[in-house]
Length: 315
Image 1: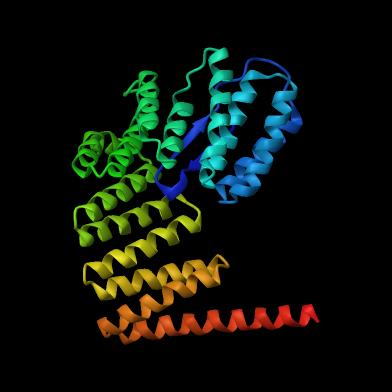
Image 2: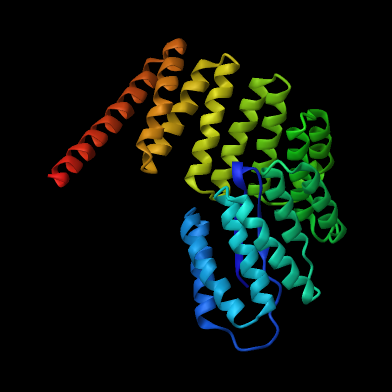
């Protein structure tokens, strides 16, 4: 059945959502086509296109009064909106998905978990905590190990939001053994990112930087969208700089700039060039300085050419 991989706003949680099994009935080819195309767009990081396609799938499901497909596609559409940072818009869709699946007596733990994450992103921490309790009531730790870990990650984020670093660390420690038993690089990456946040909160920039390096590595292994990896590399550059490790800082900023430029985000890439070059100069690493300068020249040439093309087109 269709699966939607979602990345929550701020890049802090992701999970696979498998739709409940369909009862035997004729399928809707248009609905299936929209949902399948949406899944591909989402996996490639094109969340806006995935949103459009899931809206079409949801419209088909609503028109057919198909509770199962309403639940599936309302949830998947909400996943896209959370990934786009539009948590307020996502929550009514999650309530619709929950109602439709409850009507069929289906497990709604994944819906509740995403709603908890959306509430947490909006700063509604008490609601997030309550939703996490509801979600866990529908989970079996042995059967739903990945979901159980995800609930702990969201709860740890809530703890961090409340400036409770020790509480967050306890939650992460409690699922560390569960995480080791899963071959899930995405969850391992999210966990590393949270450990980096706790380390940063407790004044340990070198530890935070090391965890951010691991987060980026897990994301590469998981095939995450480039924008997620470049964001982590940029944070790692900052953390290594705070730790006084200038060569590592320069390298991470350079790699973030290179990734952003490869994504067609030249202006954002330029924002990493300055700190990369400064750190490389402090480290007296001439080879790295040369690579950074070469990348800067390439970015500048492309931006100049694009500006010239735009000026000619405007004549």
